[in-house]
Image (cartoon, rainbow, N blue to C red; front, side, top):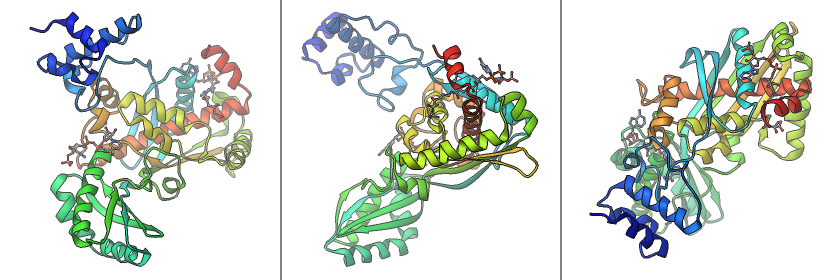
Length: 409
Ligand SMILES: CC(C)(COP(=O)([O-])OP(=O)([O-])OC[C@H]1O[C@@H](n2cnc3c(N)ncnc32)[C@H](O)[C@@H]1OP(=O)([O-])[O-])[C@@H](O)C(=O)NCCC(=O)NCCSC(=O)C[C@@](C)(O)CC(=O)[O-]
Ligand SMILES: NC(=O)C1=CN([C@@H]2O[C@H](COP(=O)(O)OP(=O)(O)OC[C@H]3O[C@@H](n4cnc5c(N)ncnc54)[C@H](OP(=O)(O)O)[C@@H]3O)[C@@H](O)[C@H]2O)C=CC1
């Protein structure tokens, strides 16, 4: 029999640590969640009533998605669409779930979707698809580092068989890009990861590969599983140039009448604002975001669908282009080099997030594996294009401040 109040007191005094509560609830994770929250309420004299309202089952997420759980945070979720997409993996009209507290954001993406769909839709193209991990090896000197790198390059299939296939069915080692700095060897491994974003998969696989390399080269020291050239969760030129996750491009041509009627401006002004703001302004700022607000749309979709929120960093990298066509219409595109997303694994298992994925028809694994994640990447790129189009138009028409005064305060 568990004495709730006694356990709460023991958590408050520190006699029982936050992560040890399950040991005293016979493994009941929901009860442990309540005890931790109650302990915080009492300790700080606050009410955590709203954090305590949820439908997510702690039994399903503790130990897979969260530790020391005390409840949930709720973020309002809206939907933008329909957005017509003519992709390589998706065709049709889609509604995009967006979790945000920034008033005017969903309206903006919705307006972009409306303009693009009226114009015939967005064309999306997947340029590359890989997940990377770059372990660090300390070698006696640069020549030895080069020898090891050459051996690894020549033994990709062997490493797949000897190491990777032992720990994953969907993970496939496809290439390695070595970088040598002094006596340091960084092996930037590239993997196919099916419908998973893939970071656990490639991390576990890379450790197996390191074991094989250490056996093969006893004079080389495996120092760190991530040598920071992966690059995960940090702004960087590596992913911007070489890609990570999905590298995807979305393009549309918006007829002049639609730009004028729905977006209240002209193709010329959008192109000029884009050039002077997103290209010149970003260059002067030393930014990797040659765009207006990829992060807004990527962030809102990531939160809605259970993606790793720290990877919004690389998802915000990329370039928006806008040109006036010879016919006087607007060509607009977004190039997203590093969209790290999945439809299985990680936070996509959480029921609310899975439901959000299901709105777009991309929850779970695809047939063949990998196709669902690619569909999802195309939908995200289309939504990002919609957001860029609408915000650029609002800035060109000098409507930005007014929109946020009306919808954001
Ligand atoms: C707010 C709008 C859309 C008004 O735009 P509008 O053209 O005045 O609105 P409208 O009433 O004429 O309607 C046009 C379309 O907008 C949509 N729409 C219109 N209102 C709503 C609404 N309430 N809810 C849902 N959808 C709405 C809707 O799609 C509608 O078409 P329909 O579907 O009816 O044919 C426009 O002014 C706009 O997009 N402004 C830009 C806002 C924005 O993008 N904010 C993002 C955040 S900015 C930021 O965080 C980043 C920043 C700016 O700092 C980055 C940087 O440095 O650049
Ligand atoms: N470990 C780390 O260093 C880091 C971890 N993360 C976290 O990693 C998690 C994501 O890792 P990730 O590897 O994507 O997810 P998971 O660790 O959940 O791995 C995906 C699982 O789904 C299985 N699977 C079933 N169907 C498919 C399919 N169609 N395609 C692909 N896999 C399938 C895989 O099996 P099988 O492997 O047998 O194919 C695997 O067990 C997130 O929670 C993220 O926050 C983030 C950054 C760094």
